[in-house]
Image (cartoon, rainbow, N blue to C red; front, side, top):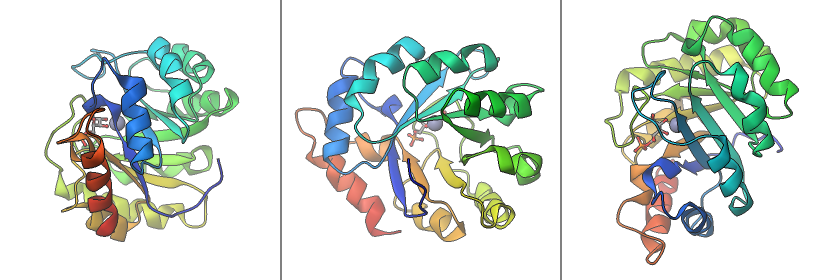
Length: 225
Ligand code: DX5
Ligand code: ZN
């Protein structure tokens, strides 16, 4: 993976057909997705369960772009190697997931993956300050994690501005996750974000048999940023 700050759209397969991940991934990549965002939920850190490393390994061969794995699990450390072996390019852990996030980020990099740090809406930008040299991506949650299709929380945009300032020249992506659509995408990009996760806003109206709406939806976001 080479680093750049161009805007990247990362559809979340949480909003796709769970019986058809391979075909859904191929469809959104053909329609212009830059990365594929993979939401892992454990029913403990967040109140919902999605899937784990075995599913990640199964979908990996279908991803031609970047496999961006967002771990909404606690604990994280016992599972890092399993997600790295499943082929994750980026593994993101939550700062709120445990007391030893510094160790977790070191372990992610040691696994060979890029390290991401996610901040819940209730967590201030300062929580990332001691960790900036250990991360390749900061994920600013703009909903409380656990479910797709929630409303974007506007008060999180200020955090993006603060993080962009804190990051300076470091090669660290700022990713926005939750409720992203064409109405709010320009705000977060102007504040300094370069990766836009979008579940509902990309997958709405389409299917593997009718993928054109995926392309329309991706272009609708790209057109406004
Ligand atoms: C929320 C997940 C998000 C979510 C995005 O817990 O981390 O990635 O699925 O979906 P939308 O775009 O529908 O909010
Ligand atoms: Zn996510």
